[in-house]
Length: 148
Image 1 (tube, rainbow, N blue to C red):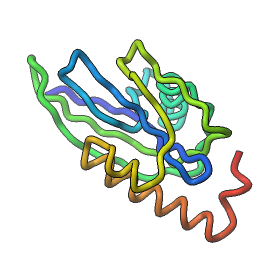
Image 2 (cartoon, one colour; image 1 turned 90 degrees about the vertical axis):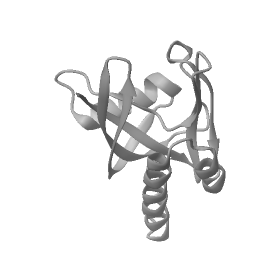
Image 3 (cartoon, rainbow, N blue to C red; image 1 turned 180 degrees about the horizontal axis):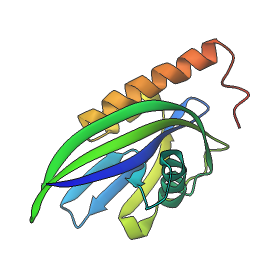
Image 4 (tube, helix red, strand yellow; image 1 turned 45 degrees about the vertical axis):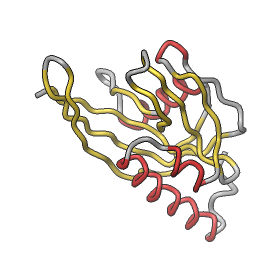
């Protein structure tokens, strides 16, 4: 078994969530949240911010840690056990640019219900629910507007 750790972000600007559309050689096709592998010597928050920036071109700021998801998938040589640490983030505007080298063909901000239905994986839908609930709570308390 191959174990790997990634970090990512649920990036929100004016109530909308940033998603990426990936199509890898027509084998993998769907909308996802930005995330990527932790590099040696890198702290989890650093990884999350770097991956969001690399994959979407978005300069984001971490608001708070949301939690982690764990899942596994098969690759030809083995099984990969993946742990992903997620952060709620704010962005400074709606601009995004998908990273073509990683097979991301589109990116954009979507209303919560649109994003939830677009997401390909159940574990990302679950983390989106947690993050959006945290976002709404911060807004109710008047603590979101001062971010970014």
